[in-house]
Picture (cartoon, rainbow, N blue to C red):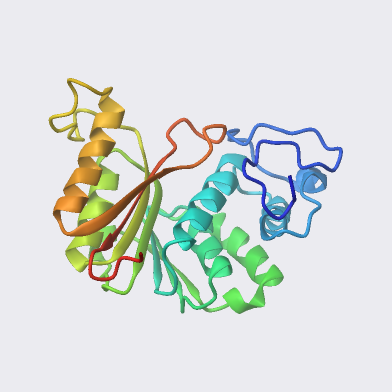
Length: 242
């Protein structure tokens, strides 16, 4: 498997370094640099994350796998990362498509280490300077535009539904990787008699988004990164790509 097109990041990279668990919440550090020696964008991004020494390993792999799948379908547009945490997903989206003018990272509390990661990314890619804004507060207070790409990775429980509602109200393109399928706050719809509750909740989300006039795609990222690996992508039918 080539370094440029690694289908599953959990696989040995082919440089003699043992594979390691991409689902780990352990922080990447400079000791991990030798695991990412290739010239691919993923390896370069991973080395930056290692130098920043603040990012859980799992976040690197999730952000990368979500970003590259979303960029296969959506180009351009302002990137709005809701419940964005460190903001790596938003910044990976900019690196994968430089035609996006900027990215917003919105969260109730932005981790203090987000600025460390961002500075390290800017050192590696100066073109990111002044193109990423971190906004701490209610994500519903940020006006969205129909040209935006709204993304969210593992917004807990009903937060995923709020992201879908905000994006579809604005008729923006949207991609979510849901987690924490809480039956008390999330709706399994009519499917819970046939499907397990987490799957029923995500199927209901997809059906509702389609009912709002969206072309919906249902994808997955590697289960070796997270068992909560269902990726829901939608675009208003008038602007959906073929």
